[in-house]
Length: 135
Image (tube, rainbow, N blue to C red; front, side, top):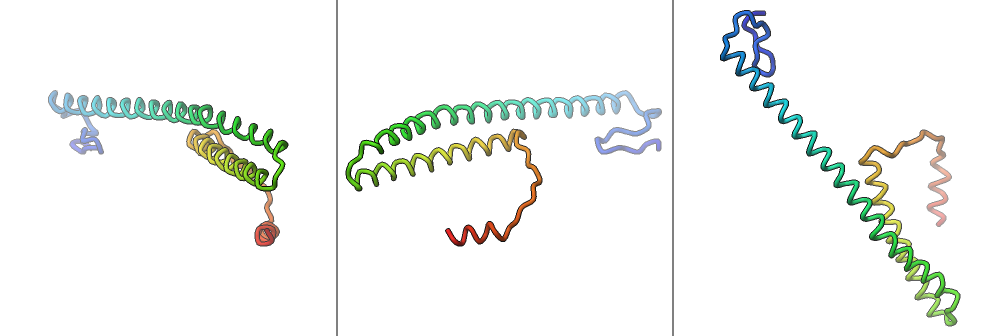
């Protein structure tokens, strides 16, 4: 195997390797190690930013939406005309849709972080399709 080179360009047998070649291989390995370390630092930073973003979404959006929905619930009992009740129902529907959207974003973040596990459960497809078609 003397004189053969591996993927990084370093010789696999070092009995005839000059000092310069040895130094070049060492420098190459140092550069690769540095690149891997930088990639790990960037990955860790990215994960921290994801966590911060999803926590901010959770607090900054869910809290006001929940307050709006609570207010709509209180208003619902005081509305006297059908039009007023309809407007409050529309507000509740929009608030619930926004809350579901926020929850979907948070779920996506959990999936990215590897915090979601899927269980294999029996599922009957036909009844579900029939139920969707009926509705």
